[in-house]
Image 1 (cartoon, rainbow, N blue to C red):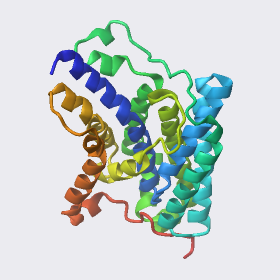
Image 2 (cartoon, rainbow, N blue to C red):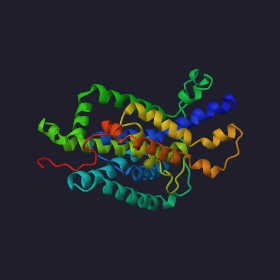
Image 3 (cartoon, helix red, strand yellow):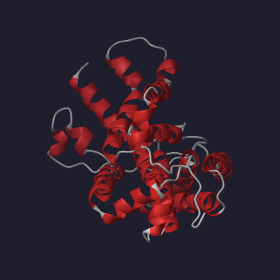
Image 4 (tube, one colour):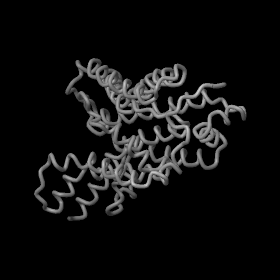
Length: 308
């Protein structure tokens, strides 16, 4: 395998892992507040189509990604109202959201099927991008990739060193105690869900505006579900999410690796790798449920209302 191929694989791994990183980061914050939102796949799809349509008509990436984030927030508010105010099952509400959003995105995007837009340009840092092997991967990416790195650092610092981060964790562990201490449990959970929705929308738009700058039905291809598994893989720890996202991103590029090694493997089999990797990770983690529960927020997916 030559140096150029390794460089390109590293570069593509980060690009492929970026939407997973964004969605998983938003879901971690959501789950740390005690809310399990299984609607990530649907929010990504709606973000992808909303961002694409906005970009198609405005020719502005800012408007495109802004529209995607706003769409994610609005659809997440619908989930939050059903799951938090009406106390419906979070699992059922999330699944219903994904089913609804999948159909709605196909309906909204029907007139744009197969159309393309200009891809989000790379922001190359001259000099550093020429570093062998890692230069292109680290210093020739687009703005959303750099944004994802900043968000990971901010989220880590938020939970480790900021009182608001401790408040989110307290609400996720025991909302009744947190409420008795004066914390606004419902407001914190709403904000966490909205933040997760915004990141899911941006992740979807990254697919339709940067990764493959076009709109096609179901273009997320299960990435929202993989991101949910990634949260468990990372044991609800922000610092592990980036590693996991890029590992899954690398698994999605196995056809390039096989090509570089000169292996002749069926392309359809290699396309299954990220999903097989997801199943393998969940099986391995389930072998030690006690250890897994040490990191899982105690009130995750449990309905709560003040005074009940």
